[in-house]
Length: 470
Ligand code: HEM
Image (cartoon, rainbow, N blue to C red; front, side, top):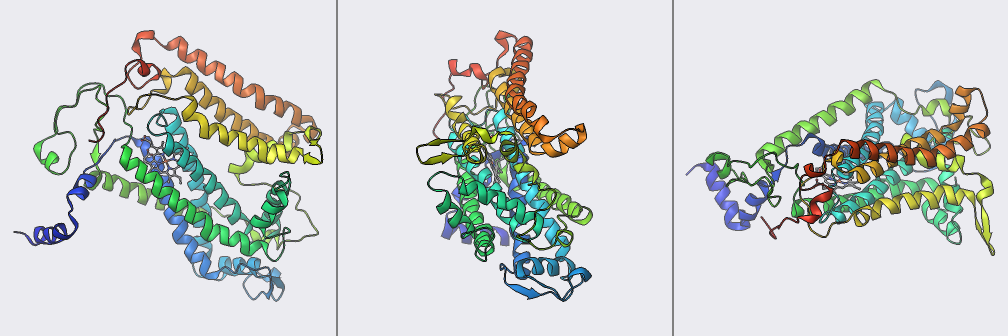
């Protein structure tokens, strides 16, 4: 008996590795778009690792410190410790600038990968029964990722970022009845005050990442429990050779093309693990290249937070731009009173409308619901309504993001922001409706009624029996 086998048996005696073998042989569909979730996962891992490095040098305090470092402009000046420590980290700590940039780009990639992953799941209809819960957990993760980015943006305490994050404080304060309490909990009182940075720091480095980690554990647990969805098969799948089956390959018998109770794909170990390793290193390489070549937010240029001043241009990160767009184009005259309670336009644009959008996202699997389980992915070109809704949603977010940059648009058109706001508001309503109409029309025109495969819209008529486990 080989030494490896004896070692395996030793662990097997104690841990009963039979279950683990089943797990390691679990099949992953060989679909490239399924790797977007992994990119998000690896970005999160890298955010954690680089964040630990940054935390060694960052000081979460607005108390004054005398700056001694390479930036001549601030040499010997008293600066808020948060700002001064990020300056030192960037210009005087070996690899500090690289790691800071890496962390920044990893945050952007994290959010971008989550957004694309979500679209992939949506257009494939992978949110349908039984995966509604994982869609809901995923949406919570997306909101948490945005929360992590928001709280991190404020930490260097420079004039630009702290002014931009101050908008969030005003929005929190606009919530009827609860506003002041929420602003106090999240921002530690007035913004900015000496309590703000420590509070946001705690949320950024501990509270939100811990929630994301718990959410991810649930997301992955559900994924393993429910299996992946898989593309509809062209034909029956013949058994793989006996060695693959012994390795934990899943397709021991011929798999019928209609049988969605079995996933035909790569075993988790070693095949999918090797693919994942490639995705990991590609993510690492992409972020290293971005960190090496693309600078991030230049805090030395903006200077420390100045309560008396406002920078000429205030911009949130791109993934908040659509929310900023709501704030910019909703006229303040929309505000009203219910008795003594004020419902301001700021509340409507900054809280109520985004809440409605996220509510619609949470509710979607229960609107497009299935009584029977569906394990094949849907073909977006077979689903005029769902694909139309998805494209309309993307168009809505894009127009709202342009609205968030209404000042740049007005400048480019040689006019005022007031003049572009109404057309932008109209486009936010008409654009998605038009997009839905065009997509719906294009798909139904192309579609032959008898061609819909199982797993598409029409599959409710012929539910597929799914065994409890496989
Ligand atoms: C921190 C953010 C997230 C991470 C790291 C993550 C990671 C993953 C991974 C690795 C998979 C398996 C591979 C794949 O199908 O891509 C997966 C599947 C899934 N995710 Fe996410 N995800 C995140 C956010 C989301 C969001 C925002 C949604 C939707 C709102 C979502 C919904 C789903 C669903 C329904 C599946 C099962 C898909 C299937 O079986 O085909 N996830 N996720």
